[in-house]
Image (cartoon, rainbow, N blue to C red; front, side, top):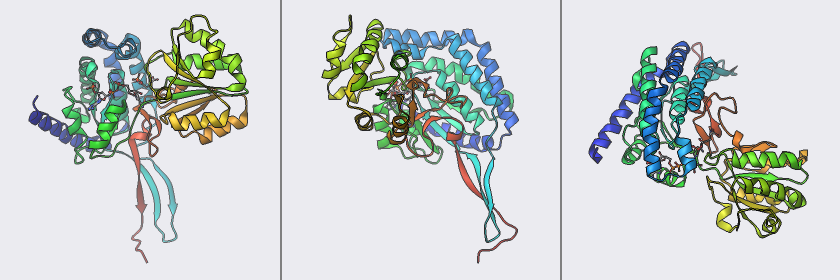
Length: 426
Ligand SMILES: NC(=O)C1=CN([C@@H]2O[C@H](COP(=O)(O)OP(=O)(O)OC[C@H]3O[C@@H](n4cnc5c(N)ncnc54)[C@H](OP(=O)(O)O)[C@@H]3O)[C@@H](O)[C@H]2O)C=CC1
Ligand SMILES: N[C@@H](CCC(=O)OP(=O)(O)O)C(=O)O
């Protein structure tokens, strides 16, 4: 496609999405649920064709030398497909919040005023090369009565095309507009430029990715944006804490998966527990091949750990999101320094305190300026499915409307409704 064709193509996607969004907004709950259940069935019945499409993506990715954690997130395994199908069924079983009216109160003038939950309209989403996101975004879009234009990562294009075809089929089976969910079929980034500059058709843009993507969106977007950014997540091991529990959680937060944005990238340790905690977690990270980029004080303790892969941390490490078997480690004086460090260097995504002190936990929850603040739990829990949302659009690092894992509610807004009986303003 040349530039002119891409402009025409995205314009057509926008026009079609706008038309579909009006129909989706008034689609009955039962019809939307029918589409979701059809999608679950189609996913389960398409294992072979999905695997074949995914294999094409995987072969290209490996040939291009994509890092293993990134290849891992590209995989559309039977387990991933089953999880997507279950997610669709869970969404179908959830209450439909569209059209719900809340807080209706009578005003002194006589009118009654309340707020009705409505879909946003059309959202455009740009996301990483993780094919399951295509289904999560499509299913949430259907349930919330929106229309979506999805632009997944280029490495996943074959998988996404195969999945999008199933979504179209499910929409058609349920009698919903087939353009309610559209995949951008080209990997040319010029289409992203068009998509973020069509305010007549697109109500909100949801970028889910790293700094390069966000820089472009911030510079060029002509529509409102809900940013889903990088996760420089921290786990702070407090004094006092249950050291055995802290070791277990800090291990899971870093090593259960290296690629996701909710993996811990930085470990802060209170000086009072460092001598006991660091050798234990150090031994686990050493055994799993995790490099520790440590401050001088933690380095002195970790040097005693056999086989530890150690490096001296520099300032850049405190702000780094590695998405790899690397973690930065810093000894801090205590809670105040930990909070200051997280607010200075973190990305306001997800941060956890491991503590036995109730007051410390309360202060951490209040003072850390992040979308998810956790006490005695792994940062890996920052996820829509784990939070009970059924699926997730992503993890918003913006502060308003939708913050943290975004589900159905995040794709809606509340409009005021006013009921009168011929009332006039005095
Ligand atoms: N907060 C959240 O919910 C999540 C955040 N992330 C973050 O995403 C990052 C890792 O994923 P990664 O794939 O590297 O992210 P990227 O930002 O490289 O890619 C994400 C998507 O954005 C596109 N993109 C990137 N740069 C541009 C650009 N300049 N113009 C147009 N399109 C662009 C990519 O397209 P193309 O395929 O062409 O490169 C891809 O579709 C990490 O920082 C991670 O934390 C990941 C998942 C969830
Ligand atoms: N919600 C996800 C985390 C976000 C995510 O998808 O991250 P990534 O591996 O960067 O694509 C999960 O923990 O399952």
